[in-house]
Structure formats: structure tokens, C-alpha cells
Figure 1 (cartoon, rainbow, N blue to C red):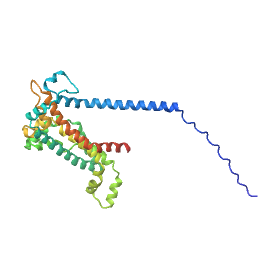
Figure 2 (cartoon, rainbow, N blue to C red):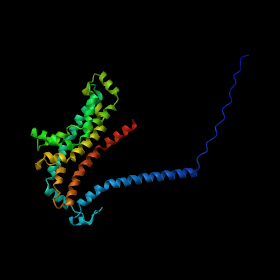
Figure 3 (cartoon, one colour):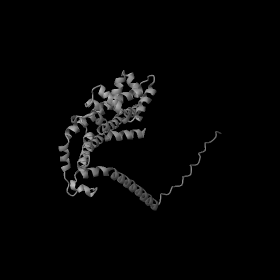
Figure 4 (cartoon, rainbow, N blue to C red):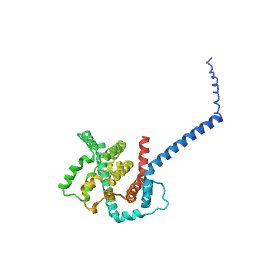
Amino acid sequence: MPDQLTLAPPPAPSPAVPPPAPAAISTARRRWGALTLLRYAAVLAGAVVMLFPFLWTVVTSITPEGSLADGPRLWVEDPTTAAYGTLLETLPMWRILLNSFWIAVVSTLLQLVTGTMAAYGFARLTFRGKNVVFALYLATLMVPLQVLVVPLFIEMKVLNLQDTYMALLAPSIASAFGVFLLKQAVESVPRELDEAATIDGAGHLRIFATIIVPLIRPALATVAVFAFMGSWNSFLWPLVVIRSPEFMTLPLGLSTLHGQFTTEWDVVMAGSVFSIVPIAIVYLLAQRHIIAGVAHSGLK
């Protein structure tokens, strides 16, 4: 007779895991709540520490001149805008702000254009000596501006560009830091996208404009913020090449508020408020792209 199939006995049911005791759940929740509270407290303390200089600047700018000797304060009982009026009477602030804004915007655009093209070339193209050229380019990051002031000044003098907008823009046409950051962003874009576009007949220019640039917008926003801040806060180079008040930038104009014997600190702080607001606006506009870039790099 054929062998009869025998069914194996069903496996014994695994013992049920008892649910955690309510006391353990309550303890874990309290511990988690305490840790969360500590985190929020630490973040709040850090925010207060970082925002205090800005708050003190604004408060000092609206403090009456006779009350400045009383020491730092966080609130003013009788605020006044006299310092802002004095500032506008002392300096051609609107002209200075326009100069700084124009120089910062143009230098930022130049750094984005040259940096993106150079980053694409270093990341996607193959040519002899590419790594050596890139290493030499990065080596310029170790050379401070103070070392280059004299050669750049001589160059501007030979080209007869002293006391012009071009002299202010010349050192900021390209940025090694921007090229480095954008090169890393370009390398993060999959090469399969380039290959698919090449199969469709796209060349380097089309790949660069329609694939690479849209995908590295977070890195572009980061470079734009750093470039704008660097140009907006630049002081040494404008001090060297600018003599006419019509080309004066904001940091250079604010430096004239410091007297030889006395300084009206409320007026200086009013000028500092003028210098802080544009940078804050630029950062708020680019914040979404910067956060997206950080999140993207964290998910890779």
C-alpha cells in the first residue's frame, strides 16, 4: 500500500507577551517629556544668546543720547528715532545703500555664473591636469585678502580702475569656496541623467542649463547668501580703492561715524541696523532652499 501522508501537529502557540505595566509607560513618558523640555530650553537659551546682540543694537539706536551712559539695557522707556535722523543728515545713506546693494547683487550673480560653470567643468568634463588645476584653485582659499591687497591695488592702478565700480567688483568675480561647494553639488547629481540627455541629443550646454542647474538650486542659494554677505560686509578692499563719496559702500560709510575723540554710539547702532536688515531679508528668502539642501544631503 502506498505510504500514507501524516500531518505534522500544529506548532504550539507562542506565549503572549504581556503588555507593559502602566507605571512603566508613565515613567517613560515623563522621562521623554523631561528630555524634550530640556531640548527646547537649550534651543531657547541659544536663540536668546544669538539674538541678544541684534536686540541690543536696535535698543541702543532708539535710546536717547543722554541715557547711553546708564549702561546696556533691553528696553527703552522713551524711545526716539533721533539717531536715524542724524545718520541721514550726516551721510548720504540712500546713495551708500544703493551702492552696497548694487555691488552685492552684481558680485553675487558673477560668482554664481562663474562658479556654476567651473563646477560643472571640474565635475563632469575630463581633461588633462584637472585635479591639479582644482587643487591649485582651492589653494587660493589659504591666501588671505590682506596678502593680495597690494598686487590688486597695483593692477587697478595700471588699468586706471581706481575709484570705480569695476574696482569694487574685480576681486569678487569668482570664488574658490563657491566652486568647491557647487562642484560637490554637481557630483551628487546622478550621471544617468546626463547619459539619458545625451542619448536624446543634448549637449553639454543643454545638460548644464536644463538638468544640472535646476537640481543644485539649494547649493546655489547657499553660495548666493555667502557671496552677498561677503560683498555687503566688505570693508578693507573698498577702503583701499575708493576715495569719492559717490562710490562709498555701507561699511566704509559707517567707519566715518567714529570720531577721533568721541563717538555717537546711537548713530553708529542706527547705521548697523541699516546693515543688518538686508542680510536678514536675503537669508529669509533663501532659507527654504538652504534647508532643502541640508535635508537632501542628510538623506543621501
